[in-house]
Image (tube, rainbow, N blue to C red; front, side, top):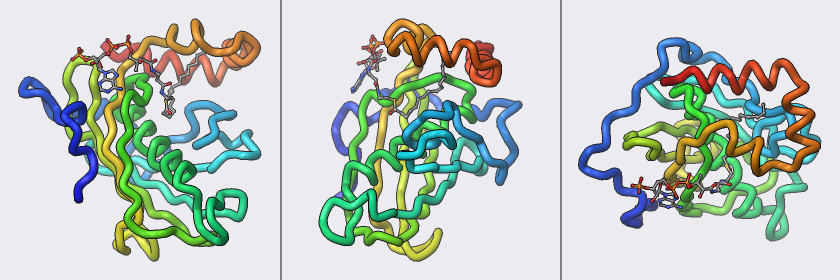
Length: 195
Ligand SMILES: CCCCCCCC/C=C\CCCCCCCC(=O)SCCNC(=O)CCNC(=O)[C@H](O)C(C)(C)COP(=O)(O)OP(=O)(O)OC[C@H]1O[C@@H](n2cnc3c(N)ncnc32)[C@H](O)[C@@H]1OP(=O)(O)O
């Protein structure tokens, strides 16, 4: 069974291949967190997954995530929602290579093998197509190594949004703090200049 079989995840006929932004980080370079408090990638988020994605070739990324005891669902096994979060975050980081701000519209996940506590998930993701504001992408998480068996996979549709998506909907205290942080503002601007 393949994931992403719903019609909503099939790119339309006028979709085009993704275009890597000319100033995207070189393959192998870390992408950095898009927000320090992000549950997926933020370095300042004590409860987070601390995912550190690296740019790959084209519009692709890789990341690793080691399952900790706090991530359990069943005894000794990762919670599926946490694994979906790791996939979501890895897929979300692809947008940095397009220099587009986008949020997850749809995420379809297959849980193929149980993932024990202590295991490292080797994640890789790529954008497959773009159609207007819609960004189609796919990800896998493997155990045992980057070429190990697939444990989880996901297909997703991200939707491009403006910075106002966050400023108009986020809780004011966090938005104020983000606007007061020059690094955060610089990062948001870097996305915005994309035509
Ligand atoms: C300085 C201060 C500011 C700081 C800024 C920081 C920068 C940060 C940088 C980067 C942040 C990235 C964060 C990544 C985190 C990891 C990823 C996540 O977990 S994101 C969270 C979960 N996702 C949501 O919360 C979305 C909630 N949903 C929405 O807000 C809306 O539904 C939204 C924006 C997704 C779409 O709403 P519409 O009104 O803009 O657009 P419509 O017209 O509905 O959709 C556009 C097209 O997309 C399709 N579409 C939309 N949703 C779909 C869905 N669920 N399934 C299938 N198609 C969908 C529609 O059918 C339409 O297609 P047709 O153009 O007609 O062909």
